Each structure stands twice: as C-alpha cells, then as structure tokens.
Length: 278
Image (cartoon, rainbow, N blue to C red; front, side, top):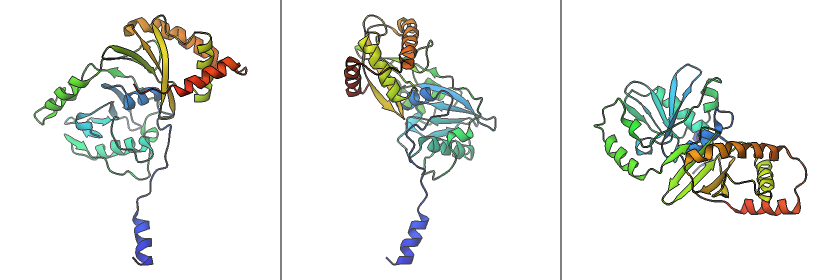
C-alpha cells in the first residue's frame, strides 16, 4: 500500500469519543441510570429533552435492541446493550438522535456514533428520572400490535426475570431475590475513597448492617461508582427504615476526616478485597 493510500485510509477512519468511566455523571438520577444499565431487569423512566420531547429509558428492549421509534412516534431507548464506543452517554445520545429520524414503528440500529453530543447535552436540566420497576416486560406490548414476534420474546424474558423492588426511602437501592438468596444493591455517588473509609469506620463499629439478619458482603464498581451489596433474610419493605438509619450513620462517617485507626485500615483492606458479582 502506497503512502497516499495509507494517509487516505487514516483520514477516513471515524473519530472516536474518548473513554469516560463515569459516563452518567451530571444526569438526573445518575445512580439509577447505573442500576438500570447494570442489574435491574425490568424498569423504565422518562426524560425530557431540551426540545420538550419525552423519551422513555428502558432497562431492556425486545431482542436487546438499542432503541425503537414506537408506532405513536415515542422514542424508547434500551440501556442493557452491548455497544460501548468509549462513552456510553454519547452512544445513547446517538440512539436518541437516530430514532428521531426513524419512521415510526421501526427499531433503531446501533452504529459507531463517532464524536458528538452526549445525553447530558440533549436533556432538559429540569428533567426528572423517576424509575418504575416492573414485574415483567409486559409494557413492551402496551398499546401496540404484538404480531411482530415481540410477544414471544416477552414470554421468554418474563421467565428469566428476578423479582426486584426499588426502595422508596433512599436513592438507588434495589432489593432482589435470586433463588433462595436475597440481596440489596445500593448505587452510591460518593467519592470511592471516602466511601470506603466511611464503610470501614462503620464495619469496626458493627454499624454497617441494615438490621438483624443482614450482612454487608462486598461491593462492585459500575460506571465510576461503588455499589455496596448486602445479603439478608427480609422482604424489601423491612429494609426501608433500616436503610434510612444506615444513611444517617454513613453521612456521619463520611464527615469524619480523622485518620483511620489500624483496625479501620484493616477493615478497609478487607472491604476492597470483597468484590462480588450479584
């Protein structure tokens, strides 16, 4: 290949957005965006664009689709998809823009979006992000003709869904039941280092539980945020008040800027090593 051809090919290559770890930062309900993207099986929330148009954000769409322009013209966007071209927020903005140019009743195919606006650039600053958790995926076929095979996908998806409840007393905490085990995954927006310090202080004081029969078993990282995970025996409703009380203890621990004691440092190291996948 000659020099001119190499230069031409290089110039034709689409410019990519830089990688962003905390891709949902700046959006209303950042922690809930992370939850719907990573582990809540069936949930929706509606955002308002700067144009005034409403867009429904879904944890999952039929066939793991990136988006769809509904027959009534409404745009739905799926979060649990495989695409990641460096900045997921840019990917989602591309889906929204592409859906706006798509004929109603058709899916949106994901392509490399290149450099461009992010969801943060499209959304009305006053937009809310109020999550509704669904027991299944029946909302997929509400008010539409399901003769396109969506009903079959719906039946298959409903068979695999894990019961999930969003706590109402605190932000971005989701109860789930997986077989005989029950977990609470709580997405937190605090600085990771500060949060680990605070959790270590609470661990030493035996104050990191959400009541009797609960245990902080570890955490995982998602989109630049830490997600502590508790295992417990209770129903979701029984965690509401304990979660409020824990949040108060956590706030106090976060405000404590004294150096960690040797015992607290040991507890912090143990927490760092307890990365879980649930």
